[in-house]
Length: 118
Image (cartoon, rainbow, N blue to C red; front, side, top):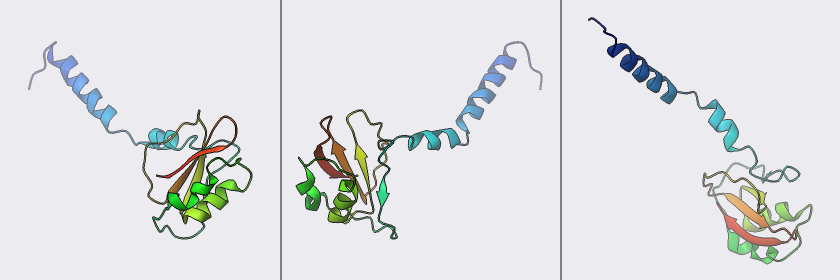
C-alpha cells in the first residue's frame, strides 16, 4: 500500500485519537476523590463490610445542630450508614452515588443544614 502526502496526516491523526482514548485512567481516579470532604474532617467508615444501607431520615435530628468533632460519626451511626462525609458549600464533590454513604452538609455558620444519602 502506498501512502501519499494527504494520507499520512490522516493516519497519524487517527492513531493519535485512538491512543488518547486508551489512557490508563490513573489520573482520573486520583482526581475523583481528591477533596470530597474538608481537609480537616476526613470521611468516617463503620469498619464493617459494606451493607449498602443508609437511613437519612434517622439522622435528621442533626439538622440545625452545630457541627462538632464527633458529629460525623454520630450521624453515621444514627443512619446505620457504611460511611459518612462532611460537605461544605465550597466542597468539591464526586459524582458517584454510594448507597451506604451519608452526606452531612454544613453551612458557613458551621451548622448542619442537610443530611442525605448518596
